Image (cartoon, rainbow, N blue to C red; front, top):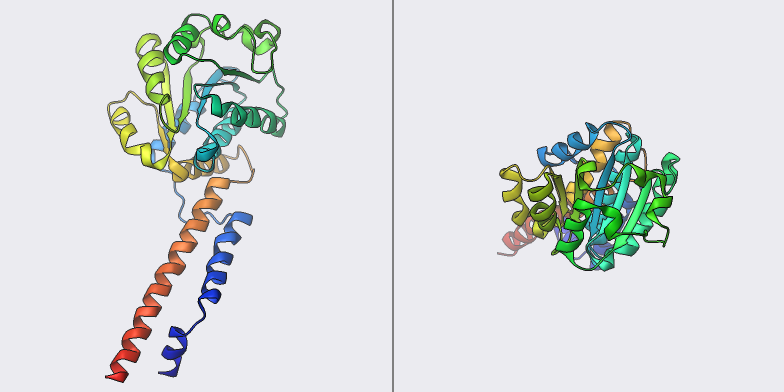
Length: 280
């Protein structure tokens, strides 16, 4: 009984320290606890994996820094997959707040694979007018974006010689934290130009995206942190990258936190009822 009394009197600061250490450890060294790839992530992975080398995929960065922990890992994982397959990446955005995040990805990720800006990756930037931008890209990308995000004429970038309109691009991956986002790409790019659309969304938005997936309008879906972790695992299992996996690390951290909380609840209840019975 003394043992149960001791459990009930553990200083809460000790509990906070234990939980804190368990949360921090996977962020330093991901463990991959229970992260398996579901059919939605695998569909997107297989669609990109099947694209012939030398082709270009389009990634629309439609989120802001507040959604970065959930959505940026998706952006990084898909770009790493594309570069490992020798695909080219064209970045754009329907959110002005996503420009800095796309710039970060365009700057940091290509050097991992020896890729060069202008030849293997181009960031178009942001333009106002969602429907006009997508429809304009469907006809002629250079009419909508005469220069890229950095002010360089598209005519001076070798990669853009083979990419003139949306029909030259096999798939767009729209990473969306809200509206505008993947729905606009489905409405304008897919309906009018027959473009395949994959999506990455926050966990709370996933329910709204499932109907498009079930009807076959959408090619794959990454939902929340778990979706990003699933894609990271697919990329690493295929041997395409050995980079740090932030989404997997976050899922590990969350899983360990849940486990320790459940154990503490169980231990606390056992100790409470044991001491209560003795007192009665």
